[in-house]
Image (cartoon, rainbow, N blue to C red; front, side, top):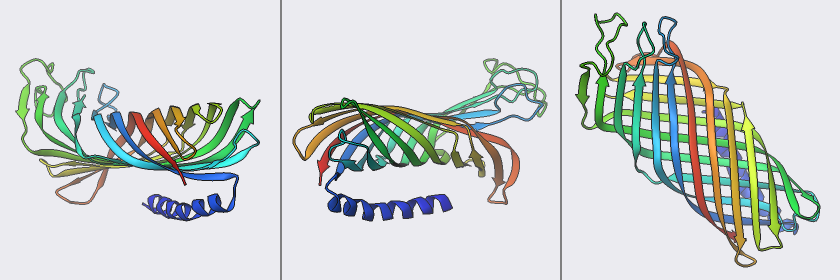
Length: 324
């Protein structure tokens, strides 16, 4: 929570500083770009097994975004003539989802002490209640032979995903005898359940810092294409999983892993003050691990094991750039 508060304060200060910098220095321009886009992919919730279990995972939940639509805006401080010499640049982006159904949540369990067979599967309608992504980058650009523009930068990102699983069905393998950890195959007379209404709530929050690099080519002042790449292990994540039917909550605190994001940007200038852009990227995080805690009937949280998290999101956005 402290990280989110500091990041919010930083954003507010930045909003005050960037317009002043652009107005007082004729080498730089300030622009604002409204954007509309689509997320397609999933966020992942993982529970790792105790030693007596045979499978690599105890539980995996995939909260699908297929798709999620969003709106937002991008604010940029950029050099007026980037091909003359090295220059500083920065940008700040906000994305907010449009609430609605976004595919399904898939929950898989592997609880056997004998083998790695699937012991449980459930599927529910996934409602994307709220997604917020705030991204800030700052760095230096270098012209190369008056043809290419190389950028090196630091990228800071905050992401919050809020989902609800509703309705659906579940299939569980028979455990014989009960509490033995020995299960029949999941297709051998399993227990079947149907659900109506809300079943599960999930909230996942990310914060990471990553170095990045990009290489761009511009044709005069009309057209620009740019490829970029960021990668980092400097990742923090926490989440809250609420199982409504059993009144049980799971809270995970995690860190580390690997984040990578390749991107491709196409820009076309319509006039000196207007332009349009298409931004395509893939954000991927895996191997983030930590401790999981459980609370039953609103009681105290107790540590019960190890957890993990990840995500894989394709992003496509259209932007209308307005130079101030």
